[in-house]
Image 1 (tube, rainbow, N blue to C red):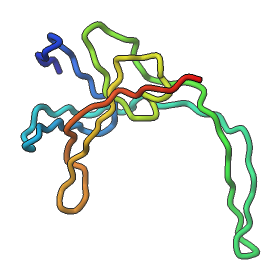
Image 2 (image 1 turned 30 degrees about the vertical axis):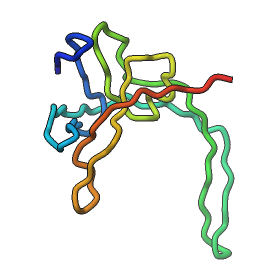
Image 3 (image 1 turned 135 degrees about the horizontal axis):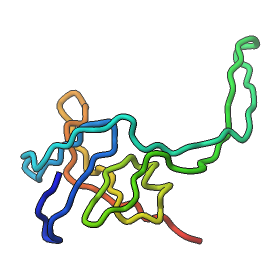
Image 4 (image 1 turned 90 degrees about the horizontal axis):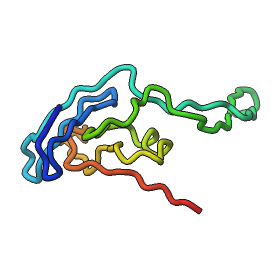
Length: 126
């Protein structure tokens, strides 16, 4: 969806599987973007496993894993922001075109009905 901002005309593309509703400070809808499926995902590999016994008989596994890449994330495009999950934004730390919903608004039952902001994830470098 193209919108006019103080930075000029920007395209906002929702790459999450959820509809994103952006609300102003009064709860009015600014825009609503449908989600996509499949959405970009961080790929991981399992690096280890241990088995844990519970109550002397039942067993379950605890895996260790590491992130190795992002699948399904389009290349940067001029004047375009991509709305993604936080883990995708954290892994793709070299990208400045990724936005994550922030300042969630919830209904009386605690369900998220919108967001008042987006954020860009900054990763610390050692």
